[in-house]
Length: 290
Image 1 (cartoon, rainbow, N blue to C red):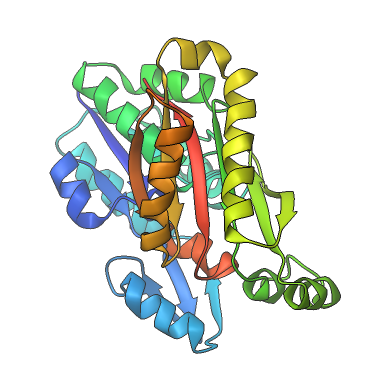
Image 2: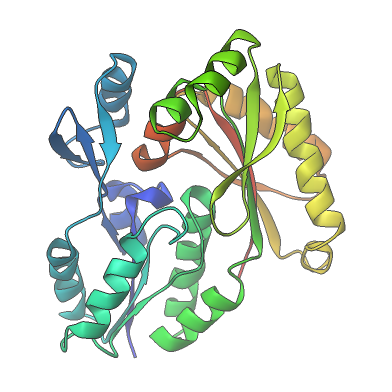
């Protein structure tokens, strides 16, 4: 049994990395002033932020199921089954759309397993790496799917947003709240614990945001992930939006706070996420490791 692993660009895995890993990555579409671009195909991170900072009208879109189907068809030429790991259904309808597509198309039914394990960005990346490892061990698509679903809540993401401008623009804050927050220079720390993006804390300084995220992870490690940490089955991750220098500094702070653990990746957030939170964001996450 040969199982292909496919994810989307929300995982932060680039097309170049995908080739190195031997997997497929579906590029997520982003709309800029009505024109569609594909992440890491027809637009780079640098080009995207140039547009975003220039007050272009930026929004996200679902990938065309037929385009995804073509990638699945290609994978099935050399593999028996597919495990597809898209972004969380709590953040987009993409997962539900493609689940229906896989079940309704006879050539995919029973061969394509769409994982709805509530992951995004660096935690979605870890799910993909776990899938790759299991596929190399000869695990079936169903076995990989079952594991990823069973462990779906064994991750956390905490994100410091540098500006409220884009949350307001995307309708996630009222104009009044955004205006007050901007005047007070509030930097909200948001969290993803499976489903949607929720508020976790409000701070005013970057240093306070980093302490808040570290303390949140410590609480997770002392409570719901205690046994996984003891077993050495958790890894730390960092994501950012045009904030690599701070991300590198944050890595050292995380390593100091959690001796014996590793920061497995520092990755830019995907364009689909970035268009809602803007540049300057910094995120810390943890995930179970297969």
